[in-house]
Amino acid sequence: SLERRACSLREFWVACWIVACVAITMGIGSPGAQAQPAQQGWKQLTSKQLSAACHSTEPAQHGLCIGYVSGIYDLQFAPTPPRGVCPPPDFSPDLLAQVVTAYSDTHEDSAAPAAIGQAIVRFFPCTEQHR
Image 1 (tube, helix red, strand yellow):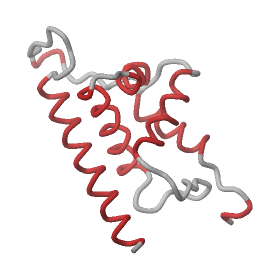
Image 2 (cartoon, rainbow, N blue to C red; image 1 turned 60 degrees about the vertical axis):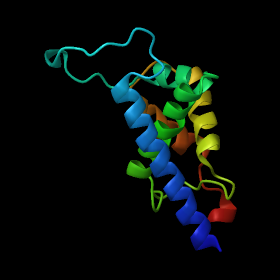
Image 3 (cartoon, rainbow, N blue to C red; image 1 turned 180 degrees about the horizontal axis):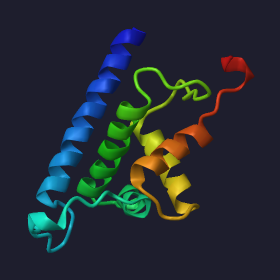
């Protein structure tokens, strides 16, 4: 059923987000990654860094990409996207990553969450059939 499929998709996204958070925390996929002193503070992922992870053939980096874009989507657009945003019926974490990568590759570097939001708004506008 549609409800079961939506639940499974949400569970998949949550699992990807958890994997990405663990990967970021542990520095998986970052050669020579070492713990940084706390005084350096948090550095938000940039759209170009996210794009590099999405293009990567390394499973940990690609998992970071899928988890990150899925988590931001869940925070900003789920369960009901805002007016004017209509993801297609075949919407998936992989499609979302492709859209975000296409956007990031053709725009100036910015904060990754903002780039994800812009990509979704630009690539999935509602058409007449959605209204």
